[in-house]
Amino acid sequence: MELPLRFKRLMTVRTEVEGAIIVGLLTDHGIEAQAVGGNLAGFRAEVPAMVQVLVAETQVELAQEIISEARRASAALETQSGDFDDDTD
Image (tube, rainbow, N blue to C red; front, side, top):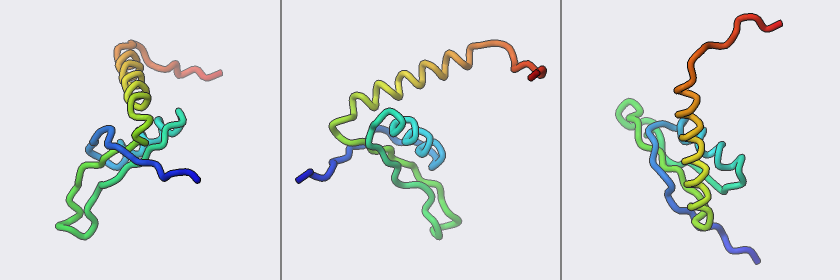
């Protein structure tokens, strides 16, 4: 009999979209992840709330490595100069 997974907070982000992107990245790498929180519907014009990204507690270190690598890759892309070519022949 498998025991249920225990989740631990990996990080807190500002939007549901950001949370979904991070969860997608992690699940693509085999990490059990989920985003919880977000807009508080019906509460004072849907006040935005922070979103917590949770991962299986046994995968926290691997998830941190994946996020760190994604941040490094993103920074490298931001430092590249040039645009896409208009010629797509």
